[in-house]
Length: 388
Image 1 (spheres, rainbow, N blue to C red):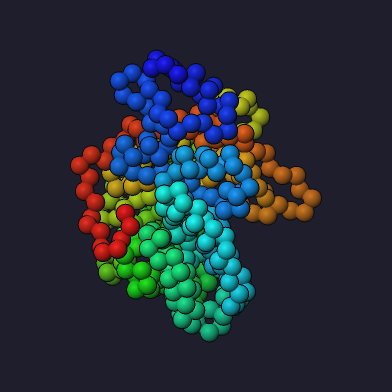
Image 2: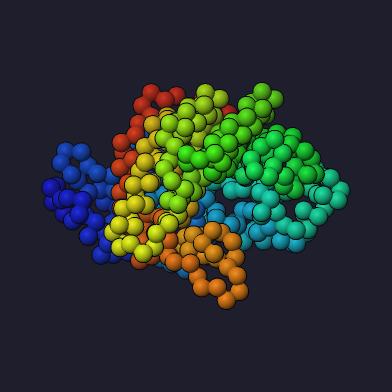
């Protein structure tokens, strides 16, 4: 490929093979980054994706793309409590261990997702927590999980999805932990995690902040109130994860509200990571070109807002290929499909299509990362043993 190669020619060449070469493609005097991870590093950020270890083992094309494009990996399933301990005292560390070994072999880092999430808490633990109100059960789960992986995991989503402004209590979800221990469980979980892993970066991860509707606006405010409470109490909170499950059926992004939201997070002294980005379509009847253009435009609009804030340190997509998107499973919204129901259409909301060809969303992410800058942004000094 010569130095004057255009994007269209490059896209066609890339699409001809499941996993294209790592070599940088030149475009004039400034070489274009050869991967999404290389694009992210230009702005002192990282790029990553959620993965399942069994798919990496089975699918060499996916494996090559993950190694090529990612700095960080998020276990989609296998670090959650119900995956690690489906029955009390019966542990299933094999898949998570496999993913950590894969990451180490390829020089990648792993995000710890997630320690507490009501929907991934095993039923036996829910019963015991509600009947006995024993925090020791949470402490033991944290100690086993964080202790096993030590400094191989430097960043943890300690509490996942604590906010609920529609059916919650003063903005907090009435989950198992809230019912057992009250709203202070979020602070207590952070303190517990810090005791076990003093060098790790600790986050709270949540969704539903992006759009210009009353629910998303209320969720932004409730999330900020929670963070302010935690900071005022001295809770050891280093950052937040914003899932960014974008949805073309929810209307326009709230550009002004989102910009103010990111600024307020930064003002609290918190790092920000986009942790689960994808795009849910609302029109499967249009041509693939039109659909892919809409997805790419939504991703670009969001990232231009997010990456204008220097506190945003990384972007993680919830998968790389449409072939494995959770939006194409179950009922298309993350729930099991009713018996006999037809599967949902293939959602095209990730950077690569189901044949591992890059789509316009790939270029949208790449260009947004290249166009952003963290120049002059000072990281807070890490504690001893902390993995940046």
